[in-house]
Amino acid sequence: MIKVRVCQKTPAGGLVEKGYLECRGIKVKRPDGSVQLDVGPGGQPVGEELILHPPGLVSAHTAVRIGFALCDGQVNGETDGIDWFVVS
Image (cartoon, rainbow, N blue to C red; front, side, top):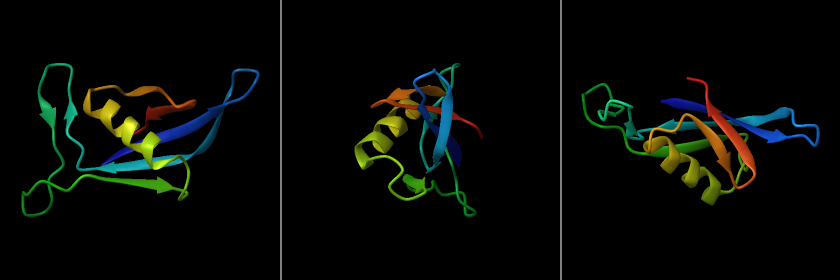
């Protein structure tokens, strides 16, 4: 599971945490070209799932775009005006 902190920028440039996004089963490309994959207790791949905390934190479209960015190996970024970064 990957935990992504979601923040909103203030007019002064600071970040205010809005919540976080739990990403399960996402295939993450590492810098060396290998792919990290979540597996369950039986060794089977875990289905892809994005869980917002709190619900409605960002739109479904934004959550999916963050998920695609994670798949490409990014660990932080800005999507649809929302700043985000991986914390675990």
